[in-house]
Length: 232
Figure (cartoon, helix red, strand yellow):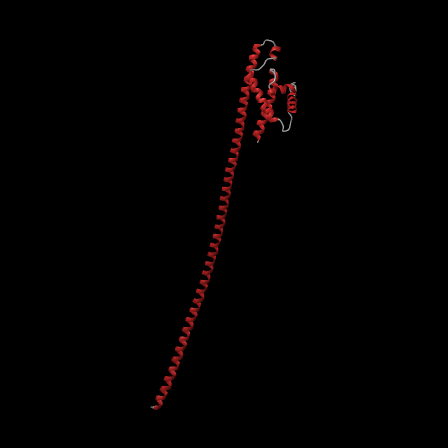
């Protein structure tokens, strides 16, 4: 009986050891399988995470590129807008300058037109005086010695004195100035220095032809002066 008990204990002990070993082996196998599965899943998740991180980096790079391109486009638009504003401003300035030039030209033309009207009126009055004198004298000799009316003669003399004084150089003597006028008139018609001087001082009763010669000189000087003023 005792032998059987000892044998039974040995068998139980051996069976327990085998069961424990089997359980340990099974547990180890399961743990190894779980560990392998977890490790594989972890590696897969890490790979997915790396892939996702790469995609995010690409997206960020593209976004940065888009932002840079958008900034470049915005800068180009701003530059074009600035250039258009500058062109518009330049056009406005040019138009203002052109308008000012046209205004100046119109003013000059108007001044010349008024001066021509005034000279035409004077010429008309002189012609009327001449026609009246011609009607009163039948012969050419009498006509050549005809005289202007006192008012016309005085008006012409005043014009001559005004132009003569304005053209006389500073420090120049009257005698030299009278000779200068005589030389300038002499290019067209014969006239003496004393004739110019007498007309200036109102001496004597000058002939119509003499007055006309002197007044043509006056007209030329006034016209030259008006051109110089308009050019300025």
